Length: 170
Image (cartoon, rainbow, N blue to C red; front, side, top):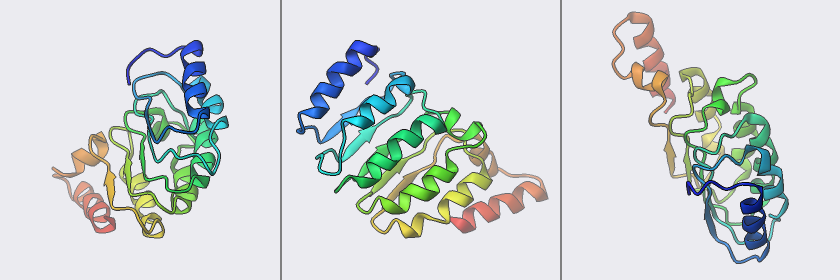
């Protein structure tokens, strides 16, 4: 994580992944948005990777759309960290549709981190609606999303109603 990977560094990561021995990879803190398709291209349904951190990798819904379909085919994939990728939920369209489509296909997923991704309460509620379809999921991290944090201390009637809707969905 945070090792300033450039195109040459990505080539080394791809070579390592292509070896078929990597079970967990932390690419956090590296701007890999332009390289995500290359990384996804070396994973197939038989790859042993079960944990992937893409935290703070400057991901967009478009780049995530190149990786999620590949991850959804992996057998035994259990953990993904998408934290600190602000563009995932602040651009239109957001990554919500992708997550709603692919999370239920991640049959072995146990843990997902979506910390500080600029998620709104409406997006959180819409995401939570599909979580029961992800049968093995045991842990969801939504901490650090400012709009959700503000609801914890809601003062106005409207904000309190929104907070109730969010917490009821959880």
